[in-house]
Length: 202
Image (cartoon, rainbow, N blue to C red; front, top):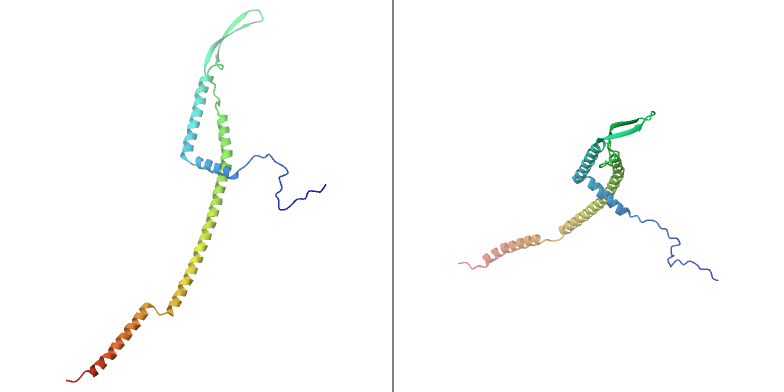
């Protein structure tokens, strides 16, 4: 059986298929820019302030009602002398009503802020890096455009100088008119004496 040889003029099928998740750096970069741009707006500050106020107010109000509501509880016990003793105590009612999901000192809120800060800093840095890359590309394009403008200006300057030098050796329209006017005046001056000599004497 003949051995199969690879040909350089034909593409080779991939040998191994890797199941890796797709990653688009541009899409992630655009998301980072939108996130950083949103964090720098007054809307973000207003939203964050409203969330913090509602969070703290709810947990404080519900926590006060939850932990400071008491009721009288009657406890009956038997002593060693087989006597029944009844005691009434004022204990918190911790099994009724709404329970605060993040009571004071608001550990969950602090965790939320820490997580937000840990993610916000890299996203803002990524957005700044993308902006710096765009600024660098724009600067390079501006530099190349300025160099082309300087080269075009120098070329036009040389062309104008060459045209001026060439026009210095060529008779211009004004020069021809001046020469024709001068020749006409000389012709008139020469014709006047000849006309006077040709007239008969009276």
